[in-house]
Image (tube, rainbow, N blue to C red; front, side, top):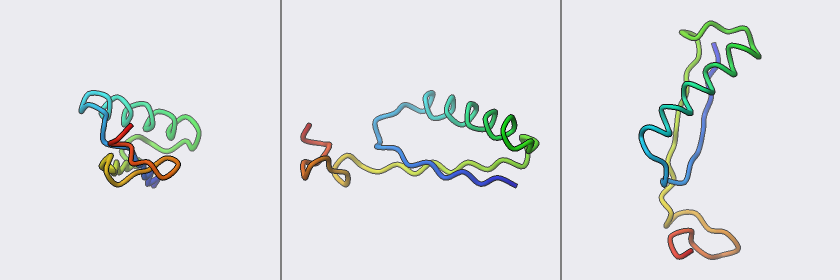
Length: 61
């Protein structure tokens, strides 16, 4: 079984997250030979206020 953990800054849409899950599942099945029903994907969203680049919160960029 493949468990894939993805972290995103929370500025993606539900449709984009769903497309990502489909694409990552396909990549896992292609690369690992795992059947799709054995692929698990976890998407964790980090609020822009909890992510910084060069000390500046993403929410202020």
